Length: 118
Image (cartoon, rainbow, N blue to C red; front, side):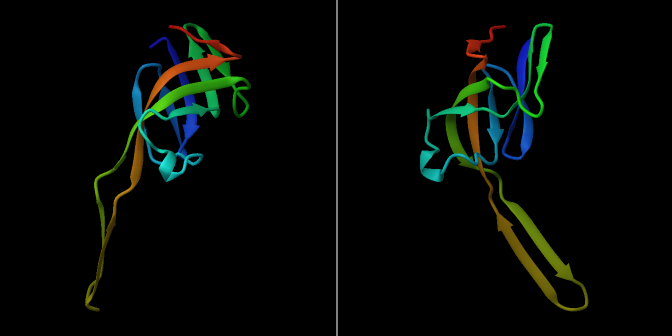
């Protein structure tokens, strides 16, 4: 827990640690046929890195910082149901969709070409 990074991906910011897995909704740089198991990914949008007592903050991103990981598997989330109804007008509409998500694991965090250890 002493080493972590904050990255921006899929329209959200995540606090990631090496060896843990995370779910993200949109991997903008990858198409659907590239989302296979064990596909290696590099995330360059690193906002902050903390290692023990040192904190490095980027404006807006850190130069030379990379989070390396791999995709475990893509999957569909639970179905979201949207129900619209206008009373006294007999209008009812029921829609739903399942969003695509991707689970990935963080293998390592690099800063200026050097791997950051715990």
